[in-house]
Length: 151
Image (cartoon, rainbow, N blue to C red; front, side, top):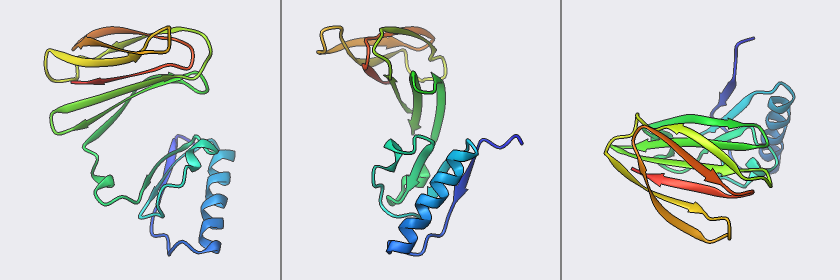
């Protein structure tokens, strides 16, 4: 059909019937393999753990004004890398959902600045600090590990 997801708006409160309505929408969207964005919604309640296709719950004032978000790489149930820009600063985050080490190749040429700060999980489980350059970059992630980059 060419539709990747839907944005649902104007929820009328946090009563029991409205919460059931959220769950109905979540289940229907999952059955049709649609991503979902709730706008003008109840406070986030951790539903994204049960419904990974729930991308955002815009309930926090100003949350709907995220400057720019990019999906950089990933595969369902394996890994994901996203980038979010606010002003001139990019925050890039990745997570490995498998128990095997992976290498993620990224092109960070869109990020401003020459160098970014990289925090990542080392193979021993300790957080390590490094640098990431704008342009092609490879980040190695241990099983169930992750990273963040701030440019």
